[in-house]
Image 1 (cartoon, rainbow, N blue to C red):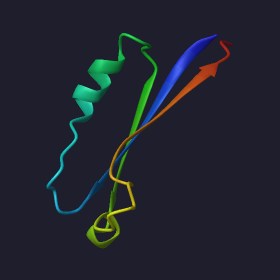
Image 2 (image 1 turned 90 degrees about the horizontal axis):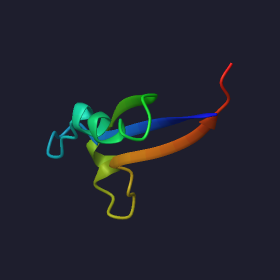
Image 3 (image 1 turned 60 degrees about the vertical axis):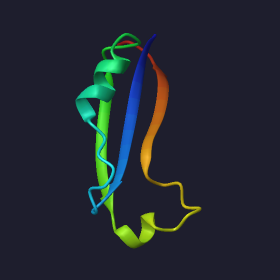
Image 4 (image 1 turned 180 degrees about the vertical axis):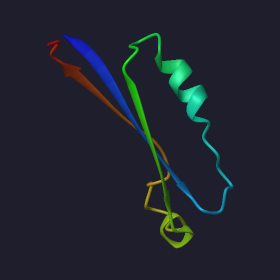
Length: 67
């Protein structure tokens, strides 16, 4: 079995916080070569809610069967 790391990067349209996809991928390649990165942008009014906690990097690590 191998591992797949799925990354969801959530940013808003303000551009205040930029997350570099290549830096994220480079830091995870020592764990596995199977890294999938998806980036989405949400409206700024959603990210302004103090308790939302939606902006940032969300990580999922999965065990996958080799076929």
